[in-house]
Image 1 (spheres, rainbow, N blue to C red):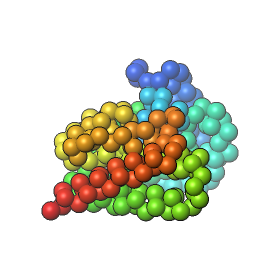
Image 2 (image 1 turned 90 degrees about the vertical axis):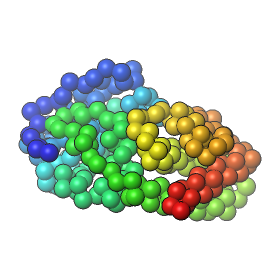
Image 3 (image 1 turned 30 degrees about the vertical axis):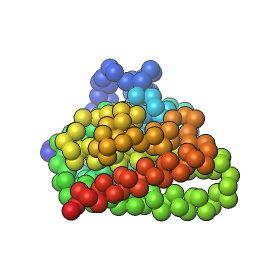
Image 4 (image 1 turned 90 degrees about the horizontal axis):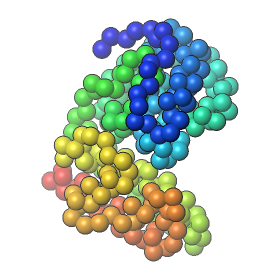
Length: 244
């Protein structure tokens, strides 16, 4: 892949959430102005491009990591926050190539649904190895189980805390089930609820707890939390069986 210096902001495609093209253009102008020729690529990615959740994730690819430039971007934090865009994950082209075996889920997430705001798209042609992806899916689900157990202890019966935990866990589950679908050759991006529904087909039963956790109302009762936990157990068991 050949990198090139950015001369400005790319044309932002249609098919995004309302007002997103203008926000991404403004975002690109800010970052391009602060990074100049060091910018290799700038992308916005994830479900936020569709408006759910309302915050958009971003990734900045630079030729060389310059902490002074990062500090300048950080100083524009309030402006970026008003645009509904997170501070970018910062990578170099070499980091991307060297991390495909370490963070395949994160790389897959960017690859599946991204808009290249400026420079080159360094994620369009990445190759993800199934064995690396399966291992991270297994690790993520087991980590989620630990988090849910710790959450049950820390919440002390407060259902509002359980709802917050469930909402956070729900986003991690969505990313992981997209990885499972990828392993079953479903490579296209699916919105959150569709991804959960498709994953239900993999395990042969509904993932009602996970589906509830990603909705705005969230998993607000103890019974919801229990159902969510059971869903994650079934997904973890499914991944374990893939390795048999």
